[in-house]
Image 1 (cartoon, rainbow, N blue to C red):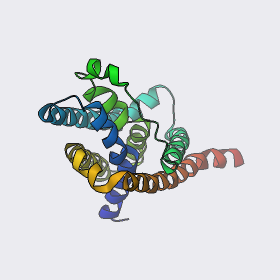
Image 2: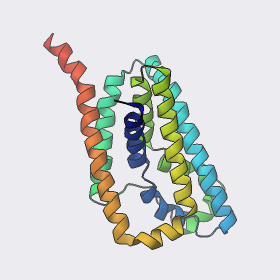
Image 3: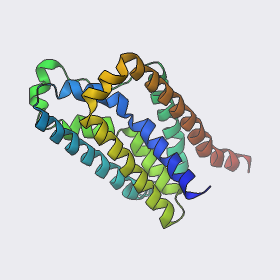
Length: 209
């Protein structure tokens, strides 16, 4: 595969797992009591938090797993299962997002950009697993750089989406949001199958030997 195809695949996997369209309605609800300036600051801080988390796990996650004796193949199997569940929920419009009760919003105002917005809504288990697996599979510095670039590109898309969330949700409507979410859910399920079989293959080969 050429570099453009690889980065497009990386971008698509992160985009579907980080799901900007799924985040927007929750973001708007959680920042409804904030001014436009504070809402923008929250979006920027949340995106930076998520980006740094994904880049950190992309580089350090493999060493953490080596320390605990966890293989990339095992991670792919678990990641495949996680992605499949996430994709299935998206396909059925049942996103398992963190919901903050209206009376609790005020106590989260100062921290929502870090958690739950930055982690785990933007940088959730699926996206973190994806970052670790893709970086683990990267055989050279160019491919590793492409993983980082794809994370940064998706982060930029999410930032723009959050800053223009009100207008975007109003433009595509509830029905449009549901259709796009279901489409992304299908893509996530395809990624899940690929991950699962790529991870289970070494185990099957070892058993056959």
